[in-house]
Every structure is written in structure tokens, then in C-alpha cells.
Image (cartoon, rainbow, N blue to C red; front, side):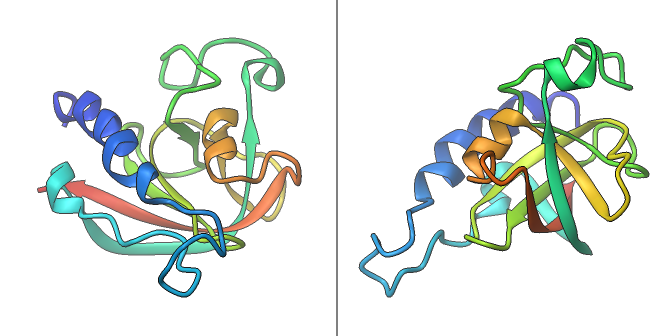
Length: 146
């Protein structure tokens, strides 16, 4: 899986995010983004899904540059913090307000605020379009290598 990670993250930008459209700009009735082809990324959904609230964090709010996994925290990294998922778990996070989604790797622990199920990097929050609100309803789906 560690060999696939850089490829998966790169393909995330190339295949999934360009398919995202702003509401009302699509010719298909306002559909925000098409279902990503996870097989092309070497991933599949496991069926483990949770819904709740997500927030974001950054180098500044983390109080440092290291994550619980020992990796360097990057504001633009496609990473997230979760309370229980094993380090390295790949998940698809979807903002339920606008249906934008991103694939991220769990490399930290948190969130530590009641009612939140995942913290994403501020870069991911920008892609999911919830930086200004700070918190958004989300769906988290666990992915697994083929």
C-alpha cells in the first residue's frame, strides 16, 4: 500500500478533483461531481461508512509540524486525523453540503471536539469548500487497495 500511496494521491488530483463542478455550472442538472472510478486508482470501497461533522486543521492550529504517525504535517497535504482508523487508511471524505469529495490518508489522531468525526488538512478543506464555515456535515467511506 505504501508504494501505491503517492500514485493514489497524484491520481486524486488528476482524476477526481477536475470532475468537480460548482453547483449550477453543469449541463446535467447541477450534478456536482461524477462518481470516481476507484478501480483506476487501485482502490475499492469497503462498505464501512460513517456520517457526522468534519473540521480542518493546519500547521498553525496543530501546534507543530508532526502528526501522530511521525509524518510532517503539510497544509496542502491530502491527509486527515481520525480517532480510531489505523494510520495509513485511505478514505473518501464528502462534504454533504455540496457533494465535493476528496481521497485522503489518515496520518494523525483527532478530532478532539465532541461531535466531529474527522479533521482534514486546510488544503483539503479548501477543495471541499468549507474553510469559511470551519465545520461541515460529511460522509467518510473507507477505501482499500485492490
